[in-house]
Amino acid sequence: MQNALDLVRIWVIVVSCFCAGSWVLSAARSLGGRGYLALFAVIILILIGIGRVSGWTRAGAIRVWRKLKRRFRRPLPLSFLVISAINLISGAINEVTNGDSIGYRIPRTLHWLSEGRWHWIHTADDRLNVVGLNYEFLGAPFLFFFGDERWIYLVSIGGYLLLPGLFFSFLRLVGVGGRVAWWWMWLFAAGYVYAMQASSIATDGFSATAALAAVVFALRGALRQNAADLWFAILAAAFLSGIKQVTLPLGIIVAFPILSGFKILLRRPAITGAVVVIALLASVLPITIANVHYAGSWKGFNKENPYEQKSFLWGFIGNSFVIPVQNLQPPIFPAADRWNDAMRRFVRTPFGSRFQHFETFAALWRAPSEINAGLGFGLSILILATALALARANSPSRFNPKKDSFIIRWVIWTPVLAAAAWMGKSGLMQNARYFAPYYPFLMPLLLRNPNNFLLTRRIWWRRLAWATILLLIGLLIISRQRPVWPAGKVTAWLTARYPENRFVKKVRNAYSFSARKEPLRRSITQLIPDSAKVVGYSAENGKLEMPLWTATPGRRVHWIKLDDDPLRPRQLGIEYVLVDPSAIQLTPGKSIDSWLQRFPGAVIGQFGIIALPETEPEIAYVVKLAR
Image (cartoon, rainbow, N blue to C red):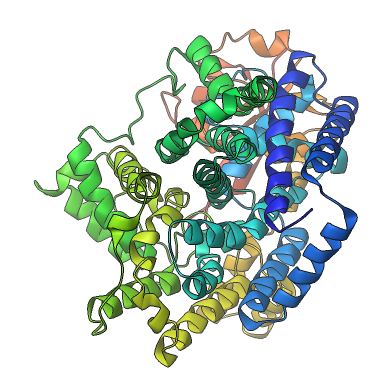
């Protein structure tokens, strides 16, 4: 190992080869213990071979380690180390609360591990099948070997630790000054979506790391005509596409730099061919083929996506409002409900009806979290202040874009096209979060101005920068999803001391919400005996499948769809079915009795589940089917 960028090279090899290898193991029905051990061995051998060719030595690794130790003694890097430590602790001591992870990421991984292969799951929730799955492939070994889903977060924090260095490299390659890049590499990592997802099982911030790796290596390879960097760019870009399909427009950024080195790649046809094969397996291609085969479209959704814009123009205009508003949401926003009500009324107006294809137009929340945050209030204010200061700067800028090569101009301006393409189509609720892989590539439009160097020396700017970092650290500490303090004990004591205090009740409710896994498991085990190794789950997009799997070791869960043959549960050996509230809403009578008319049986118990701390509980039922 010669420099810190070699750590990124190792990461790219590991993640891309592991995802490609997971498809191979699936084909051999070996997605499990022995298969994983064999795949680990192959990846280690690949790393050893590359290390020998690249001149990686133990002495070089020691030099890199000492350099990193010296770096983290300085205040800015030390702040990043504090943020990372908070995330490392909070991810280890708290349960998984991310809705997407509970709803489909972990359940579909459990389905694959139960059969030792990827397979198309019989389900009413399309997400279990159709969305990118590279993150789940990386998380599956943690679930298999440790038997606890919380440790999957190590995948996220591993990517987060590489983010500042990659952003620094990217900024320097596109012409941002060293001091400016140094400040912003640490500030950008203080973006809420990146820092809050570092201890979570989420893919938005993780995708940004993969995207930066692809662009950095593509630029290095094109500018230096280096085949090795282009190989790494191909692997990173392919891996990125397999994480989630919303990143596909970013492919335009790396396309030209990689193609510009086509002749160089052809000089080493054997290695290039091997890289392309691994890249294809690690890319979005396999799941796209599966989507076309099983669902009839490359996106995979069986029905028309109601949250995809019908008008590109109004989608772009809407997101040009939504994304800034969500980024500027205050850290504590009690008026969120009133704001959302106002936006719903706006959408019902003649002009606002143009934005009716948004899931919820310009939705805001009472506090930021990994499921809704973008860059966040602090960093957004800093960016706005920087832009205003640069616009008012008296000193002339020596910035001359004509000196840039065509490749640099391509990498600077194509992100605008990629972002516009995505903004014109997406109607999802948390678009500031989904935009996470796009933010870094828009920053050079602001930071390439040489006057940024003078700005970083201003006392007011530095104070605002540090306020941004300190605000994030405070939010991480008090996070209701993953607090790093004994929130349960403290709020329980406060509730006992002040039982009638409404504020204390709200705080207790907010923090007790994150510790819901064990109560759900207890409710399930009290109603479904451990001897029931094959059980049914009926839902549309529920949140109870994961605890149903993990309540009893060795259990197998099968989805029961409302349009299934009533004999199907009996054919699968199912005696007990957990009926999610979302399934009840799909029945003609919107009641458990209506569900029982389709699948005869008896309700043997029920329990309440809370989707969000401020919502009323919904009722889930356990049904024992008639023989």
